[in-house]
Length: 143
Ligand code: FES
Image (tube, rainbow, N blue to C red):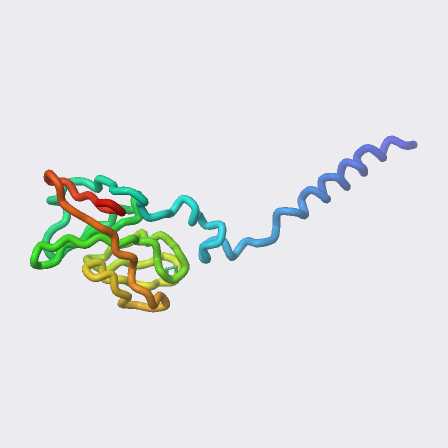
């Protein structure tokens, strides 16, 4: 007569476990909190980014793994900027021509000047020291 009891007990346990992981779906795609700002940082020392010839005059190159963009003016002057967005700290992962586009809220920056060309960001990108040495581009503090 008591044969039905064990299965009733097990069902109760399973139902209890299944309730937990439902909350919090829609928020993960956007906002930065928990989204990895600890790993996403600008160099704190000079980094070798690669061949000098990779950045053409009037052009720019995004070095995603270092969160740096390097551009060269029409006159040949190199500039480097942190690509950590000044709006809410997302790493910028897209370069269209010489325009950087932030994936989080759509801010855009000019890679030649660091200036904002599309809000919501209002502050320019943080400029970094950069130089060309022995055919290599080196950027970051102390470069
Ligand atoms: Fe908001 Fe870049 S973090 S636009």
